[in-house]
Length: 237
Image (tube, rainbow, N blue to C red; front, side):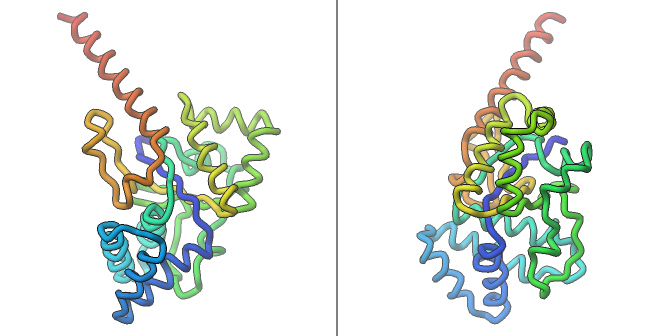
């Protein structure tokens, strides 16, 4: 799974404050309330406009559209306007759950999180690009951190997915969520680092709120692959 996966610390209360309630403002033609909220959180004008644009798109979502491809993804995007998020390349809870379904115990379905006014069907996992994945509640974040320390099998399983140093990035995201007292949402393609030209990296959210550790790991891995390819090519000449 070659997705650009990001992890977003956010609580259900913040989802309502930052996304679901502002959606009603958009629908009521009260966009100035969104800009006021952004200003209260110290958001720069450029990102306040991106935040507003994201909400405008969200407000057009039909009730039968897949939640993961619409509201879930937009929630991940708007989280990155308010605080840091974390990146790993191709490593996700959705992948872990496909390989080991027992890990569903750490995840909370959208139906238990989302206001009833948003009945969109949900897969509750990453299914393609620009899509939200699983959501860990505050208690599930705490439980997973505890089990990583106390259960060797959990550590082994997660290392199998978050390899080559990436588990440290995931733990950093989990610890950040735990310290904030919030849950953790995964999504794909919120941010797309360019490992060859980092300055050309893009994000639907605030690129500068993306924690750099996972990005550096991706750059190192890509650089190594390029060097290996060059050596193989030279060996064939």
